Amino acid sequence: MSKNDHDLHIRDKYADPSPYPEVKVTGRNPYYASLLIDDYAGLISEFTAISQYLYHHFFFEDIDKELGKLLENVSIVEMHHMEILADVIKKLGGNPIIRGTYSTCGNFWNGTFIDYGSGLCDRLKIDIDSEYKAINEYNKHTGMIDDPYIKAILQRIILDEKVHIKLFNEALLKFCGCSYKKL
Image (cartoon, rainbow, N blue to C red; front, side):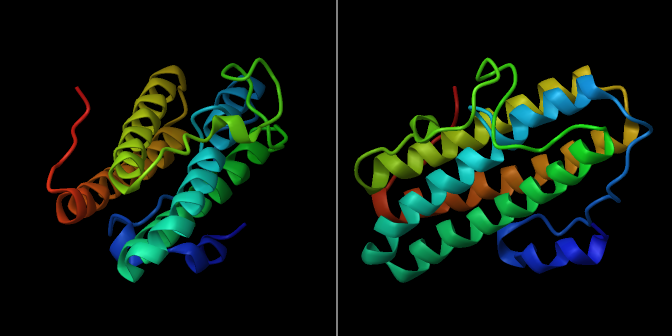
């Protein structure tokens, strides 16, 4: 997939303005692919985030159109991340199927991975927490992967996740009168 193919999913207000690095790897590496499969469709993954944010979007759009739009567009940015990860996994010689590796003991993804929450404030806090968990996983994998191209991709994805935390916190302040930071 070329860089322009990914442009379809770029959402300016919902992602960091930094350019995404070229999707390439130093060589085939099944171990790196297995690590990234967890980021792709494991317990804490882009697929889980997309599903969770869309579920929350269905409730939020009834409360406030802009809030619904926020969750919809953040999920589209997460789709962009998922596409990039699939591309990297394939280049590493892996198969980007919808399952985790280590986080799911090799089991396929399922809807129990979503934190459905209850009520607007609870769901926004859950979404913020999900972004912090994703950043932790990306940082952990960046430390385990010795490929400068993959590290650059993961570090760029982290920038978007930080934007999502900021946007979710702004919504939390507007609708719930508080902010949330991971302890």
